[in-house]
Structure formats: structure tokens, C-alpha cells
Image 1 (cartoon, helix red, strand yellow):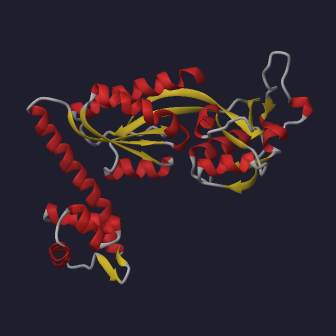
Image 2: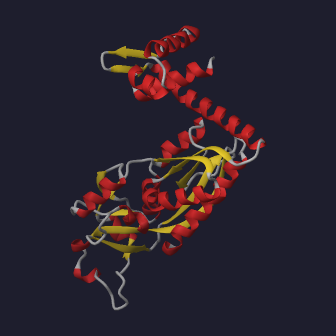
Length: 309
């Protein structure tokens, strides 16, 4: 399989158009189309369905796209290792971040990379745990920051931070008996009381959803889910409008420009504890650049979340 043809196919499939791909790759469209067609002939399968609006992958194309991204990434890793022989930590490092943490950490992480790995190309991807685990599996991501990742021989994990999930509500929805105490803090709420509230939670298998449901099952209750929403900003917008309550880390509010409409309450009996982990595939060897990247990510996450500990 010709790597250049594979790269051409991946770009066409990702951009959904031979025209857009030819511009991105700086290659004439007829030449691009010919190379992709040669790949299809070699594999004896149609990889793309050509339409008036562009090109979409067939089932075979979707499978090759998944593997092709990983193959091209591994080629980049090989080039990086060869470049390291000449000196200097270079190459591409792709890192997955959860939506609840992305806005808080993107700037300090980028600044740290420029300081410690100025020759490296940093790629940050925001997504939920399931998508990032798939990215690690197929090789699209070098590492990912995940919540409550399962321990596995196929994964290397470093625990970065342990935190409590809190109840996030619209401020004027808090009853008088639950407003600030003499210490200036909101009174805690029991997990049984949380279960009785209309909750806005992500759909399964989101890590927070599984954690909340699991803790409630241990005390013999289940959540009253009024809405399932798989977007952090959308969840907070709905909470702000009084559509329900959310159960998330306290630093989640760093994602909103104005946190004033919200209030946070600790959850007790029991507390809901979540672990934030840095995860990478144990199957793939780490380059020197990636090893340094692990140190940079660990340091930045720990320092950034220290005020929330």
C-alpha cells in the first residue's frame, strides 16, 4: 500500500471533497483522483462514493479511514524518532482533553509546550472518554486525560487529580433553608436528595454518568434524569435556564464567561469522588518527545487544579 495514496484518501474522506482535499494537499484534482482510484484498484474495493456534493466513505472506506489515520500517525512517530537521532525533541504530540477541563487547561498547556518542547507540534482534541479511548486504540492520540479510566494491561495510567463532584444549580433555585451558612458556604446536600432532583446528565457511557448512577445504586436509589445532553456547554446553559441540575467537578464553571447565575453545593452521604488520569497505550513505544510531553501534561494539570483540591 502506497503511503502517499493512503494520505490522499484520508484527506479526501476527512474533508468530504476532492476539491477541498486538492487545495489542502496542494495537488491537482485530477492527479489526486487518479491516486485514490489506484488505491481502490489495489484493494479491489470502492472506498468513496462520489456525489454531486463531494465524496463520502463507503463501509470499506470507513474501515480504512480508521486504520489509515493510525498508520499515518505511526509514520510520523518513526520520522520523529529518526529526527531525535540528529538531536532535538521534535515531532507531533496529540493529546485528548475532556470538555470539562479543556478551557481551563488549553492555554497553560500550550505555553508549557512552547517552553519545554518548542520544536514539537502539539495537537489538542476535545472529546468524551469513549471517543478518546478509541483514539488511543487506533493511534490517533498519543495520550489522553480521562476520568476514571479502567485499569488495563493495554493502558499506562497516571493519576493526576482526585476530586469531588458537586451539584451545580441555578442560583435562584436554591431553597432558603439551603442558602449560605454563617461560614459563607452552601450547606451540603445528601446524595439521596440529589437523586430526587431533576438532573441533566450526559448519556451512557459517559464517565460522570456511570459514576453518579453507580454511587446512587449503592445507597438504593437512582437518578431522576430529566434530560440527557452530551455537551458540557449545553448542560450548563440548560442549568442556567432552570431546566435542571448538573453533577460535575467544580472547575466546570471555568467554561462559562459568567458563573454568577450558578451555585455549587457539596454532596455528602456519600461523596462522589472522581479520578482524573493521564492515559496512553502500552502497546506503542514512547518517543523521547512523548515522555517529555507526559511530564509537561502532568505538571500543568496538577498545578492548574491545585486550587480545586
